[in-house]
Image 1 (tube, rainbow, N blue to C red):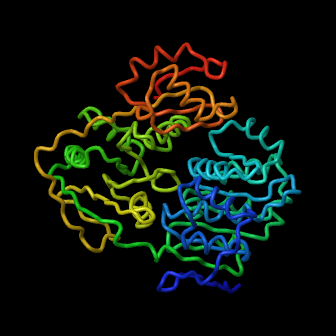
Image 2 (cartoon, rainbow, N blue to C red; image 1 turned 45 degrees about the vertical axis):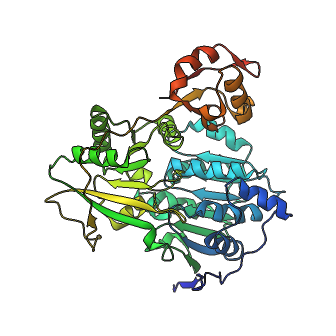
Image 3 (spheres, rainbow, N blue to C red; image 1 turned 30 degrees about the vertical axis):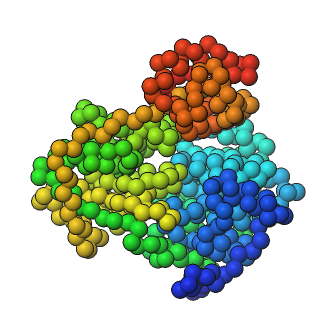
Length: 463
């Protein structure tokens, strides 16, 4: 069967050929309020084009760099397409990782649509998921293996699922989810809209996806190529840890992700950095889900500055304002190199990717032009310790707690000033609060025996 592909791109002046249609909301005020929740005043060109194409075309491939706002680009038209009268799952979103599934769920909740959402993934309690699905969500998000399991268990009805979105679908295929994805697509008999999303420019739609008339929105090629700077850092020692310490000392207080190729390498590197006096945290797929979530929260709120990670951190994570990426080990493929670099130079920002290699090490085939070598000035002092620490509170939205409650409690009972409180994240059953580290010793005795809105919660330092 011949695959017909339509392309919708930007003109040289930036005008979108495929105009956006109005959002489901009825007033400009409602649209502005929704966008303001994400700190933006208007959609970018990619989001406008994607929103329009997804609403009007049956098969869409959206290609756009990491950090360009793809999640909002496909959730907005999903909101428009949902049917208020339908009480079953209407849209299914498949993701390669738990982190990406959770991030999409959080974006949807932030949109305050009024439609229920559920998230299903490996490592999550199956009985809890089944209970959540007993009152079907309009939007179901999950990893292929877990969603396939739910379909086999018949825990939700599939007949009302008309929209299927495969986010980072190429990563799902690379992780071996092809059989599960094929099974899921074959089980959904009434899907009339398939959306494929990726940050990789050269991707192939698998045959089992059953596409016939694909519309391609290619914004990957339109990315700002001069926003990212590549720098080569040479280590004279085969064990590059001392050179990494020098580089982190040069970066000093600005956040950075240090990429390694394997979990063992992540653990070893993180441990060596700590031994050399550099605060950091490890992040990889072998960690417990809660531990990974807490690590990301601490990285986002500044309690952790340096994250040593596998390629799990290369895409699908909500990590803003990242200026530095370090390739402690280079990946085997160009795609993963691109995704790692996509953690920085996001949207209209600039960033630097450092390639740390041994003096005798050869650059891989996908780096065709040798980057300029960087000479780190001698005498660098170790990075300054972060001034923030994260508090864990074992209560959240389901306990009727919100940010205002937590701010008021820590201000009145803990004596904290406004500038001594940082990012506050309130989840369903727990909350995380960044506070100035120098206040911790006096703060904990003041609040640990006090009640928030009449209830006593456990308040400890997050680990």
